[in-house]
Length: 209
Figure 1 (cartoon, rainbow, N blue to C red):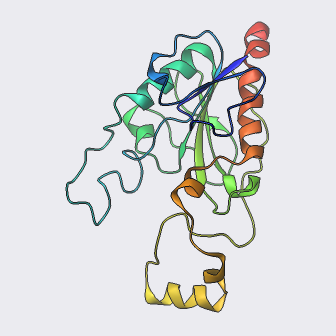
Figure 2 (figure 1 turned 90 degrees about the horizontal axis):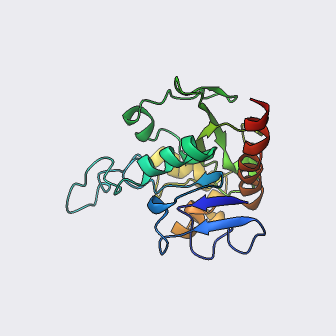
Figure 3 (figure 1 turned 45 degrees about the vertical axis):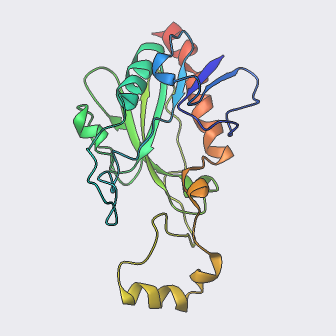
């Protein structure tokens, strides 16, 4: 059995044998163990637009997530497993984690035995590249598909320049449409299965230690 923390209600972690999903109704900050975890703590206050974005009427606070990331990190270190957050998450430096290598591969995350990496969910079926940082503790470290290839939709709305917009038209990217919020935050099934497999290796890794 594993626990999936901070996951979407009725999302891809629901309805699976041997997976105990914790959505907003259960409040994953209260997870008491004892199962290894896959954690997806909310990222809105840790990402590129942590302040609310250019159109925000009120500037929000960096890291103001109600203690969700801190709780998720504690659960991973206590029970073993893996935590997922967007690339360039400010939570890494805030909690003393070493930024992973951009080119792929696992690297040391801290002095506690944690590991980190950068992987693109586009390699697992997401419509955007969706570069993602992982923090893993007491798991087998798989050789992931580190970089996606092909044409992808931007994960953030809009274009950064007129030239970029023109290039998108030239490549017919506009025909693919923009991502909805649900599509942006979705975890591809193949990527979910990789994370679940890592969490399920905790017991074996700890027995061998």
